[in-house]
Image (cartoon, rainbow, N blue to C red):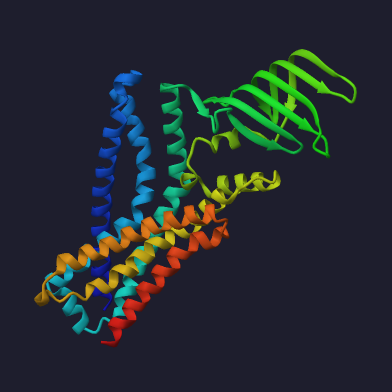
Amino acid sequence: MRVLRRYLRRQVFSSIVLVLAGLLMLFSFFDLIYEMRDMGATNTGLATVLTFVALSMPGRLYELFPIAALIGTLFALAQLVVSSEFAVMRTSGVSILGIGSGLMQVGLALALVAFLVGEFVTPMSEEAAQRMRLRETTNVVASSFRSGLWVKDENSFVNVGRVLQDATLQDVRIYRFDSAYRLLTISQARSGVYVRDNLWRLRDIVLTRFEADRTSVERIAEMEWRSVLTPRILAVLLVPPDKMSLFTLFSYVQHLRNNNQESGRYEIALWNKLIYPIAILVMMIVALPFSYLNVREGGISTKIFAGIMLGLLFHVLTRLIGHIGQLAAWPPILAAVAPTVVFILLGVGMIRQLERR
């Protein structure tokens, strides 16, 4: 039994790695074509485009793990069925639970690799890729609205026109209110540079004070400004939420909560990061019932195609429910967990149905 399970694990693992490498090359080729469209317009060299695509590959790898797990498992099991090896395993006393146990061991190893890639490699490579793109284009990190980036800082609202790739702020406006939300001052600075410990140095400031009976305007060459805004928070703007690390997501969610800002998008991304490795196991559970293919009945390719479509449905459903949950203000954990729970029940239900036969 142990030899058969080891053989099964080896076959499934090698198939998943092969499929993962193929999908990664395919999607990286699409990324290369997409990035080359702007080479003439931005004077970006081929070496820069290739470097950007290479830095984006860990993020692609992280996205493709569940789909590769599904397709690789389906392919390996189909090969075993066609060569009658699966029938030999079953007649040798290997139960469906034993086969599932072997698949889960492979899945746990892949889930650990996916977690490490998503937590440590992807955030760094994605940030490096975006910073390189910024240097080659406008050098601007973020401009969330036409008026720039808006941040709530205790009793102040901060508007930043542009954020450069070295975290320098340009066209900074700070609207400070009292506890009754009466406007006290407006500080307009040409630029701001981070010093240390939440301390910024603003330059070329026009300070407008609103008092009970008059308004005064003062010009200041340079002044210090303490704020919750830090380069780490600004770095969040470089990386999409689904490619951030757990620590960064948790820190940013806490920052948004402390400032009474909407954090649903990032909370859903946080829960998705926690649930994502389990998606690999779910895909392998879904693939397991397709091992009961009868070669004499034909239609093996159709059934494999149906399994792949089921996996793609899971991928699309996860993103769709995430967006719906954000718009409808669902609890973040519900939006993140719902697709996984549905497909776990589906996979377990199909396995139990097969066990009854």
